[in-house]
Image (cartoon, rainbow, N blue to C red; front, side, top):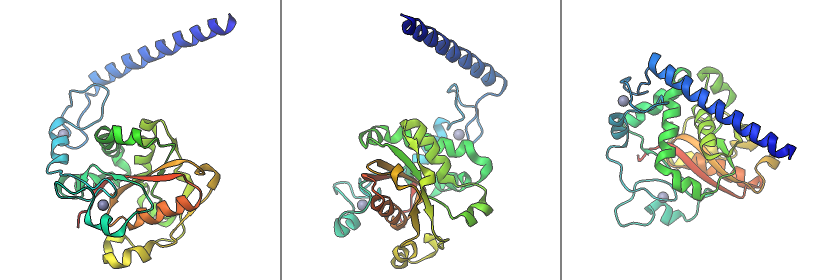
Length: 258
Ligand SMILES: [Zn+2]
Ligand SMILES: [Zn+2]
């Protein structure tokens, strides 16, 4: 009886809190009208610091079918891309992205690497979530891990973009943010600066797992901003599997099709 009364009181307080926070958000939207994080024009959607419809269309322009394993572009009737067909299985089971690393999406990703651009990074994470909500749900993710940046590079950058994406996606998924679990052993040269043949060797042994018990038997979503050949994701996912993860999936904002 006491428990029931306590639960009812708690429910009442929670709904009151929700009503108050909605009212505050409405007042805030009148004083500071929400604007698109890309073009700055006011957006009509309430409670958002998001993308306007025009910018969303621009970011997704020209998107075609993608390989379900590595999210590379594929011709209309192919099941997987030629690389996945010839190389067989990768350490990660499947990958999703918003689109190609070019034009507006490339600019948005480059902006998201700056500390001051958190709303833009959040908008990209939300766009990825809205495009792939069903796929992400079907993966039954337990924990989200950001692609780690070497501490020396983070010192200069001030922020790890993938970390912000991972936090946002973990919240949308209702999964744990396990980013602190994966770390870089060494500061590797950027993959894009190397020929494709040297990329796998560049990242081999580059990662370590700090607390294996946090990933053991868990389904992990590995998050990065850009994927080039997938060699970095391949190595990071393999490291997580060796530490006992049940399965690893990948989500990136943009896929370089070069
Ligand atoms: Zn806009
Ligand atoms: Zn593929």
